[in-house]
Image (cartoon, rainbow, N blue to C red; front, side, top):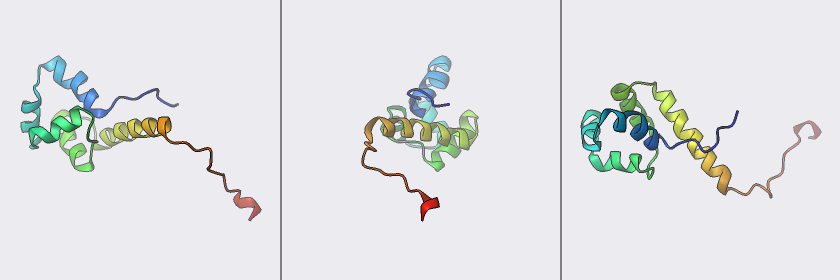
Length: 97
């Protein structure tokens, strides 16, 4: 089942962890052992979740690293579907070869 406009992981982090628990970006950056500017880019959706960040988020917030990466992939794929024109792409029929 396709998800409609899945959130960027940064939005998810803000909505699920930071806002309800009154956790500041600076506090979270310290817990993740990253610079505040690095975390800020993720929270704003300007940077994606890397495997390294997925490991850090997993240890600090829970969830598996795979779930953080899957969330990023779902968001990236949805964004690409909105922007990429596939009209010129043709399917290859391997049975006919």
